[in-house]
Length: 436
Image (cartoon, rainbow, N blue to C red):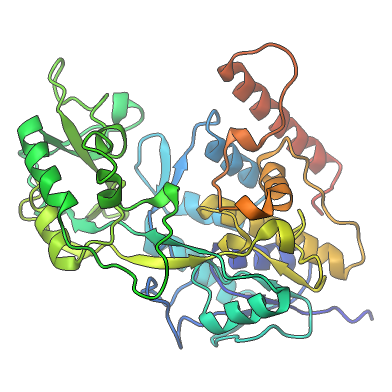
């Protein structure tokens, strides 16, 4: 009987869980390490797997949005992360949002009870001498990150990420706030707190002068896709009005558009908790309470989780890994998740999906699964391998990563052609059993 190798997976976040599932689907045993029971990062609170630290949203379900296309590809391909997201979903208009605890518990129960997965609750400080998928996420422990830095010879790369506050529904004044989705798309599941110009101007002055928790040890690098709202505000008085506080499509009554709107999105199945959309922050806790309670409808807001800011680590992907998520100079090692240089929940799941399949093929001496660039999974992998190393930064999936389409066409037509071609490619690959 052939001796089947065990694969070590480090980290039980979205990428590590997805990679583990793809391995055991193919009959390969997994030894999964997760350190949270013995040592938590500053941003983690739960002992369970695949904890959603920032938003509870997986972004748009619309296929004309690159995030929607990536979700659809993963649904087609039996992603355990997408299965859990559908199981734990909460109303969120045209987006897919989940109850954090239901989502995490679903995946934890599945992984801990799988006969081919051994879970070890411990910290790994250096890589084992065996096939290994490193999926330790953007909050990789300093010892392991320094070990990776040493063996690759690369300088540390990082940016600062921030999470938004979460508020109890019962503490929101619904005589001032109201339910509505932008342009009435989907269900009216967002709570909207409207502001007049006078209210916004007074609030804005307090925001730009509020006290922040400023990191002392590192230069502050802020990822544009998750910028603290107070940093956004400092770019100009109108900046928030074109960002998270955009009032367009959110008027309560016909012809009465507010000057600004603060939106809250359902955060759990019971609809007892709501997070403030786009309000990731590094204000001090006292300032968060003061600033939030200046918002109409949130004067008595009970904040159950304050916004936090933490350092996110990532490798210089073009120098270190190939499009299969395999390290170029250490073929036994694969890197998946946000440590690999992807950004976002979906992107992390997608990287774990491909790393798991390609690790299985590597130890079975099979050719790697080479995802075409005209799919979202392939476009993301291509970017990691081919971006300019000196300019590399994490990036969410977007239609700009796909190859150009020849001929004259509108922007909408291009998106439709990308989606059609992508799903046709995925279906053809499935018919040819290329994902086995």
